[in-house]
Image (cartoon, rainbow, N blue to C red; front, side, top):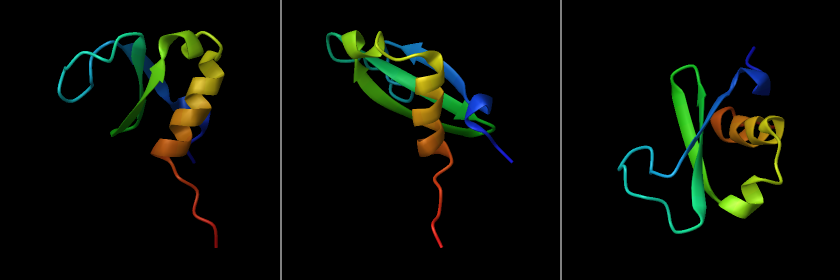
Length: 69
């Protein structure tokens, strides 16, 4: 079973699909889990407040949504 620690995190100033630059002062946080890829944009100052583990957990939620029965 996948775990958040399996997520590979990459930071980029360019959009992962279009290669367009991020807004001024923003960074794309890109996560990959197997062949799935998701991302979100974050204020670069906010980014400094998060640990690598925090980023992995947030991306894991996007990549591997939990279904509640």
